[in-house]
Image (cartoon, one colour):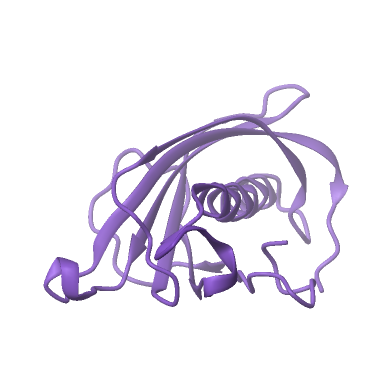
Length: 157
C-alpha cells in the first residue's frame, strides 16, 4: 500500500537523509527520509487524512530504516525482511490531504548479538506549511517502533 510497487499505493520512497543531521548521539546510523503527497482519497474526516494512513506510512518507512540499519551493520547486499513487533504513534496535529509530507526515521537501538535481530526506530511525520500554520512546516505525528528480522534480504524493485 505504501510503496511504489502498488499501482494505487501512496508512492512512498525512502532515501538516506543527506542533509547535515548535526550532533545526534541517539542515532546509530544515518537517518532515512521520504516525501510524499497523500491525496483526498485517504481522508478519514473531511479535510483530514486518516490517522491509519499516517501510521501506515510511518510503519512502512520505519521498516526500511530497520532493514537498512541491519544491512549496514552486517554488510549485506540488500536490506533483510523485517516485521513490525510493536508500534506507537502520537498525533500532534491533523494532516490535510494534498499536502506534501516528510517522514524521517532513525535507528536508536540495535540488538544483533543473536536471532531474532531487533531494531528500535523513532520517526516523525511533518507536513509542509498551510494557511492554518502560517505557511510553516508542522509536526503531525511522532512514533516509535521495534522491528525484528524475519527473513533473508528483500528484493529491490
